[in-house]
Length: 111
Length: 112
Image 1: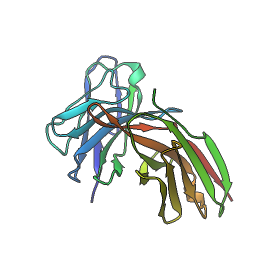
Image 2: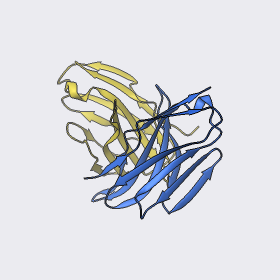
Image 3: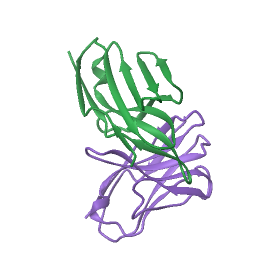
Image 4: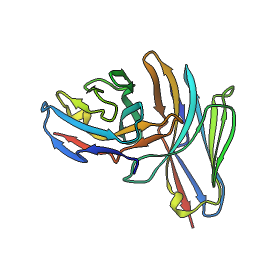
């Protein structure tokens, strides 16, 4: 089954404690993205990756890092989380026909 | 700056037709997508328009006019399960590749 998986689904952490949210897709897509969703703001792109070892900033990259060492995985790293990074995070991969497939989401609370 | 505008809320009756508009101001425009998101769920893809005109997929159609920087999503024969949020999103060429910018979303309420 074609899918995008994210882990963890829910996470409560404290300010400054490094965390990683994993994302994996099994569709061999080249393009992957991370978004955050906050009430009233829609989805905002954090980072995207056009292919392995090719990443670039989206609209809200501050406080986040990503890496793309292999095609299927695109982890999101928060080196020093702060309360304003409390949000719902979605990973997505995009087919050549421009369909984006979203993962189930990760709810993050930073205390 | 880059921006998208869509209505925050639309209400319609079951069985009716509803149109959700999206206007955008962007540079490097490549295409317009629509997504549906139910409460507590992930966005799901509905359509993508790269060229002017109407694309039809079952009860849903999407239209794009690049010269007017405008598009819409048309939902026909509305069903209660269509109550959800709908997002338009533009694909734009950035220095490092293609970015995706989403609108704030339109909440659709379908009444019996």
